[in-house]
Length: 181
Image (cartoon, rainbow, N blue to C red; front, side, top):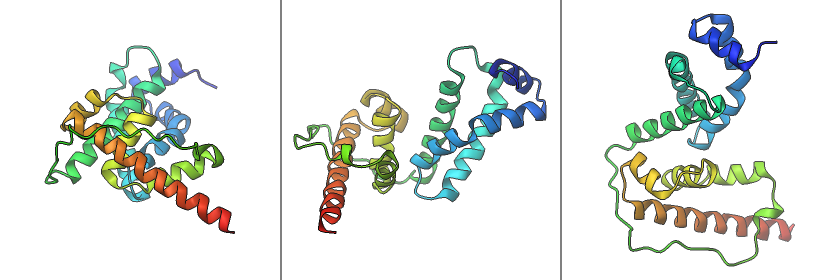
């Protein structure tokens, strides 16, 4: 068994066996990242393969710290670029006057599994899904998201608020349907 450092060194030397080991080590986790940013497995696989090519091409620029974090950033940025390419002509509205909605009701999320929650998140409309994942899952702030997506910071805030509201409605429907059974 090779250490992460040995695998990275082998990949820098472009040795296929080490590239395969790196792929095996991280493919499941990175595919999960891709799935969070798309509506279909086909689209996620496109992002996944494109991002892995970038990892192998740029691995010599990795300079310490969390290697998985370094990879994750490449995968997230590839997903964002994919979003930009596919939504180039979409009009962005500045919602800077909209306040962020903070739910005050009881937390329904604690009653469902992580997998159920990820399934619900994947059902969010695309813009909501992207902002929700960047903010809640990846931990970016609204200013960073606005810069990444070339939108107003207020738009990021409003999209997150709408995503939370949409998610809340889906969770309420889910809890109502489960109680009705």
